Length: 267
Image (cartoon, rainbow, N blue to C red; front, side):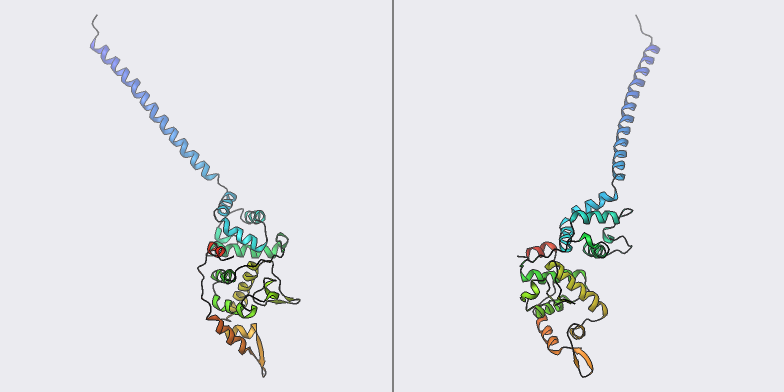
């Protein structure tokens, strides 16, 4: 039996249409699958909350957060909770206090956050005293480290003053109170909960109450820090000024210290 050419042509056309349909279905299905994957990726991206970002930032900078939580005497859990509560609408690591002021580094941002929290919620902070005998190099390193944060001060001058006031960090009456600079209160020498916190308060004091008010030379600092009266005039104690200037030559400014390097200097 002979098959007519028209019938053969029609059959071939039908077969080609079926094959084309299968190919098109496969292509469309592949495209839909790709789009689904992309949608999932976008969906996953939008599911990241502000709290997730905060937790991730703390994990990525854990050593920094841990250092300051220990120094201030606040638990990591409470610190994380307060940062989350303060940054519910948005999160900027350089403005942890969420006050519209961005700082240059995480350290400065975190310190300002903790300073504010210390004033508003003092019960979160454990002021339990601890004394540990550490390397003198570590203590001077702390001055360098905090001076890099409060960078209006001169680290060499601060180290020289501490050297003079504490007898090169050897006066037990001061060191047992984590007080390296002779800071006084109504009841005598101020007792700080840790050496890190004591050094931090010293540098902060010098930054705000001395250098921040234009007292930047040994003479102008001494007029407030260690004054004497000559005639009717208050001036810096000449002996104190001479000794501080002498001891400045013993030190260098090393404001590039990292927490990791600082930790290596501790013992």
